View 1 (spheres, rainbow, N blue to C red):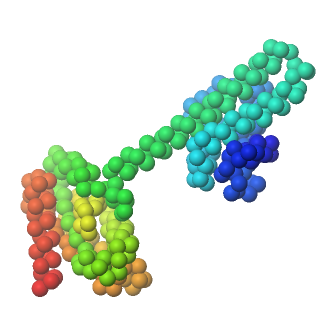
View 2: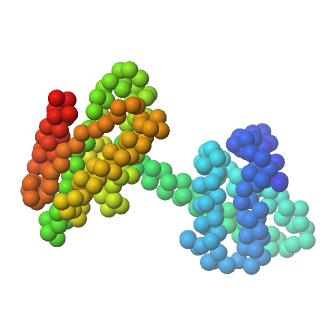
View 3: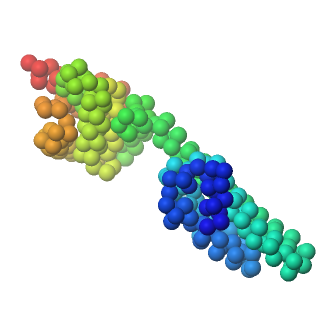
Length: 290
């Protein structure tokens, strides 16, 4: 508990104030036990990259971050642990030789340094992964954005060309979406886009991929297709949209139009797929409006 008390003192770890006692302790008792073992019987593998202790430090950092701890607070918590343990050692220094005291200090510093390093690396790994995700995904819906989807489609077309597989590109556009924004407001429009995107993605097979092309336009490519693949997908989406309308999670009357093109039968490349699917989409919209 000394580490918690140190953290609460002078508000050094502000996030501790929001937690109960068990939450404040976190994994600190485990780290104390592991540190004690390392001080008495040092084992290099205990602190090795990928070791159980290293993994626990990473998990602890992730859990603290999820609770709202800033990276500085996570590192400070381990530095406070070092201070508390060193205070414990210092109180017993009179019973130890000078060399033993120096040895314990070095082992303590090395162990805490390794734990801090694991926490910092874990933070940067998560931050880098999050940045990479944001760079390729639409922030509102979580689907791939236009350019990222285009890049994936180009690679998939090349694979289909190489192995002689079929591929379909499906364009989808929400009907009368402007009316949703105009009558219910943009927040309601954003929620409708999010729920449709989730329904769209959830209707795909695990090896197909969806993206948001912009506004209320979405696309997906389907691999390993037959003549029923696209109709089955559209039926699943229609059924899911009807369910969401019944649950009042989408505005009444929500619907969509779709256009499809296939490689290689109807289009020889990505540009051809986009042009044909887009053309068929707007034919479908005009037919629906007629």
